[in-house]
Image 1 (tube, rainbow, N blue to C red):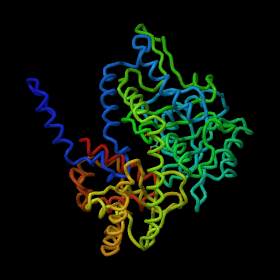
Image 2 (image 1 turned 60 degrees about the horizontal axis):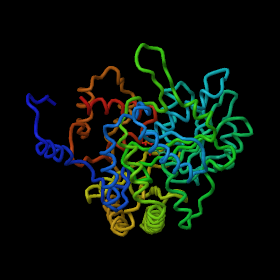
Image 3 (image 1 turned 30 degrees about the vertical axis):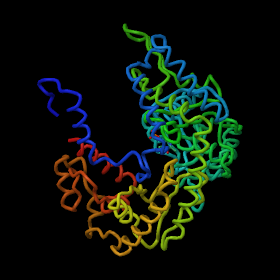
Image 4 (image 1 turned 135 degrees about the vertical axis):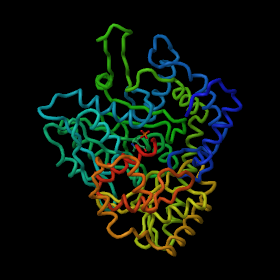
Length: 472
Ligand SMILES: Cc1ncc(COP(=O)(O)O)c(C=O)c1O
């Protein structure tokens, strides 16, 4: 971008933003089954936007300068604690930051002899690996049950060492939407004197409403003995604009371990509850307004619609030849795989028909599959979605699986990425038909097939390079 010589008018800027956003997936309407959470009620999103805008310029850095932040945060955190078993909380920018703070608090609450370690089921979100990477912990990956995809209590117990500072469970884990055996694992952790974090980022503001709507949801929150902290994202099933999550701690002393203060400089005093210092109170305003605009009734009604849509979707997918739902999710996340059609091709076929189904690579014995996050809006279009999945599966069957040029995977696996500059990497990708500079609706099946054939560390190296190339 070149900085314009002279400032430009609002209308022109808005027109340009509309052009820039042209190729984005739509954030409303229910045809994008990941990333976005739609109530299907424009007035709720309108209230959130207005409140976001009202709080936009307020800096949450200093609650003494802007007491509105304290009042709003107490209300929002209080609502989350009220639904999820109490505790003291922090409003954060998202699941990753909530997890980061829970891991920091656990790390700083107990000194261990070696490097602090975390027992983390393989289905837990990579936010834990990121937190470990940033905060200097070691992750002990724990296998899950290959049929139910739930963490295995005995395997978690076996992974606990003298240096373990945290045990992690998910409610639910994102990939297959299943809830780990929270009570059993929290009790094991407690018996070993180790804190237990429940990652309810995606389920915290969903499962209670599904339960109230009649779904069998096991206990998973801070009222479960042994659970010491819990993360719950409001920018997922709370339907708030992005930048909204809450991390709760059973004990205020543990919450204090998440805080940071510094007086080691000659400037203003720093005391932060979050990773970020200066930050807009816009997301807090947006979350506050969304909770207020929907209320208990609104969330319960959305929960009912979500439950009905998830049930219909699971049953419908199971009826499509060649497809099968993975696991038996208690939540509204549905993953399906196939031994007969290439799911990555199916995803591309759905995208051609205007729907985005999220590809998930095979990992730890779990096959490649497609993921659908059912939200409040899904029910209205669930039959259309099933029709698209059926037609896309048929088309994928006709097209057959992606065939990669012989030797390509081995070539990529053996590449010395450090010896390649971004330009050469881009050319290499283009030579196998992957246009990293392209926009619009990319065919992703080849990319996904290549990634799927690589081990995780090579996938990561390729993804990092991809990011670097697209931002060149
Ligand atoms: C279970 C779980 N934990 C953590 C996260 C990370 O959340 P965020 O993307 O808000 O950082 C996600 C995101 O999908 C999730 O599903």
